Structure formats: structure tokens, C-alpha cells
Image (tube, rainbow, N blue to C red):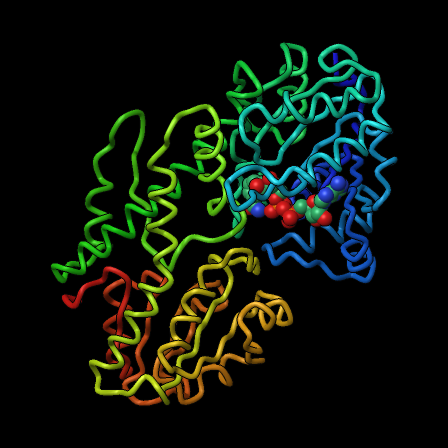
Length: 451
Ligand code: NAD
């Protein structure tokens, strides 16, 4: 009912950010007629000048191919969404200090869209939101058009579950969860995603169920990483390598599938895991339920940048080096491997701790925007890896991008007995032996002294 039976569907994607650009470019690549709408004129200008601000493998190529062959257009004009068959909303949904949703982007998008809404359109919210948001905020704003949700237009919530760094692959393979405002909206969303991406669609009974699915995933991931981080600290007490423990613990299937313990790291960042557990906490709190696990996970993970940096400081002191006057080169500034995203990156806390201990800090990351990094870290990133690591007493690897996979450690112009602080590289024992043979000292989160 809300999906026309025609050969070429027209799709509008409102919010051409990290998520919106990945979805829009993928749909354009699959032959849909796609328009991306964003309120940021700089983003549209940059694309017109051939620059893509998102460092996601394959994304720039996909966007520029779509723009060149005409399947994709990007504009600031929301009126363009009026002629779309399906409108996807992927604007940002940050939380305020108290964990409540900062609704401005969502309200702005819905209000603007309502002025161009047409009967028969299917509107799908992709942004992560607290339960009740699609029904309580999106629906009434769209109905300001005079049209009725579930009757004149379809409304569904299908959360985006991709992870940065592997987004394009995940978009084409991960099942999509769909909840609708009534059966017709749900069926239209299901049919659209099956046609759009050819992936499995998992229907849920309500908008709220689908909204909670997304929050449950990120609540679980954050908590699981918190467990891995505390496990790493626990293993360190016994000189045990946490990776040996995790790989063995993960060999027994529990429950419905493999309940895998994730990996410890310098911390959790990005725009999702740092906020979504707070959405859970706040939504529950408003209704009188005290959720304890979400804040606990957040607290553990928020302490990791300092803990990780302190490992380096302690090791330098153990080596008899004075942190003041020693140099650390931080490699990888983004919040995780293979992305240039600096939002809520835990590397900031690590760099601050290192600088506070008196170390001279140089930073290098080939994927991040140098100006944005300079503003955030107060340090201009080195132009080359060699420049960053020259005479360094410590290499702190805080994001192991693909570019760092084949680092020739033996050839780097570092100081003698240079420390490798492994904040996210998870080097196996053989690699650690190689590092030692090349004159390095190795320390990793929870890797113990035993290795
Ligand atoms: P983002 O900040 O990169 O993108 C949001 C975009 O929306 C921006 O370009 C902004 O200019 C635009 N925008 C804001 N108000 C607008 C309006 N009224 N009309 C049109 N455009 C508007 O955010 P993102 O990382 O792409 O995340 C989007 C949503 O997806 C969030 O809810 C996030 O939680 C969720 N999500 C993100 C990821 C991820 O890995 N980044 C993964 C899954 C889900």
C-alpha cells in the first residue's frame, strides 16, 4: 500500500552524514534514483568539489560514481523529498548531558518534511532514538501536513546497525529489523528493504520493539567491552594474557548462539556507544526504573583512556626514563580502526594523560582531518609517520588502521628500547617476539608480563 509498484523507486535520504551517505550511495549503486538532503551547505559544496569528508573504505568512490552516473544527487532543498516514494531519515540524534534526546535535528527534519509530504509515501526513520520517539515525535510532526500516518502515508522504524570501518559491507549483508505504525507500514518497510538491499528483514510487532532492538545491541556491546576491559585489568594482576583467556572462553556456545567476549581497548568512542546506553538509562529512569548496567559500562569504558596511557608512563618509569623529556608518538587518533571519525574518540583522554605526565606528544593518523584533529588535541598531526615517530621513546598505537598493518618497526627512526603501547592492535605473541627482536619493549592492555 505504501510502496508503489514501479520499476525505479525514488528514495530521499534526509541527513547525509556518516549513515545517510553510506545508505544513499549504496542504494544509488543498486540502481535506485536517490536524493540526499542535508542542511549543511558545506557538505554539499565539498561533494561538488570532489571531496568526501567521510573516511570509510569504498564510500568516496561509491558516492562519486553515483553523482557521475546520475543515480545520486545531494542537495539542501528538502522539497526534493516531496517527489520520493520512500523517505529515509538519518539525521543525528545526540543526547544531552542528562541522557535525554537532543531532538532538534529530528524535529527540524520532520517539520520540514511535513510541508512536502504526499499521500502514499513511506517514511522510514533510521536514526537511533529512545522508545516511543517515532510515535511520539515523528508521527505528530508529519501529521502537521494534514495527512494521517498509517492511512495516508506509511511510517516505519528500521534501525541502522552498521559499524564504521566496515559499513558498506555490513549494509549489504546484515538483516534489517523493521517495526511499523500498523501492518501496512510494516509490510511496506519490509518489502522496501528486501528490494533495496536483498537482505533478510526481521519484522517486529511495533515501532517501540524495533527502537529497543537497536538500543539493546549497543547497550550490550558497550557492556561487553566494559567486561573485556575489566577482565584485562584482572588478568594483568596475574600476569596472564587476556587474549588467551578470551579466545578460550569464547569456545563454548552459550544460549542461542556464541556469546563472545569482545576485546579490551583504549576505550569506546564514536557517536553511538557513548550515547545509546544513556538513552536506555534515561528512558527507564523517566518511567521509574533504575537501570544499573548501562551507567556501569559507561563508567568502566570512560576510565580506559587514562588507564591505557598510564601503562605507558609506568613502563617508561620502570625503564628508568623520565617521562618529562620523553617523547611519545600516538598512532591512530580516530575512535576505532579504519575510520577517520573523531567523535567522542577515547584517544583524546589518553593524549591528555600522556601530556599531563610530562611527555612530549606527537600524533599521526592518515584518515582523520588534520585541522579537526589539531582543534581537538591541541597538537598539529605530523604530516608523515616518520616525522611523528622520530626519536620516540614510545609508540602508542591507539587505532590500528589498515595503513599500519605492515609497519616495518625495525626501520622506524625511534629511540633505543622504544616502547610499543598496544591500545588496540592486539598483536599476537609471534608479533611481540618480532618487536622484541627489533629492540622494542611491548606493553598491551591486559597482556601481562608473561608474554
Ligand atoms: P551525522 O552527524 O554524521 O549525520 C547527521 C546529518 O544530518 C548531518 O550531516 C547533519 O547536517 C544532517 N542534518 C541535521 N539536521 C537536519 C535536517 N533537519 N535536515 C537534513 N539534514 C539534517 O550522524 P550519523 O553518524 O550519520 O548518525 C545518524 C544516526 O544514525 C544517529 O541517530 C546515529 O545514532 C545513528 N547511527 C550511527 C551509526 C554510526 O556508525 N555513525 C551507526 C548506526 C546508527
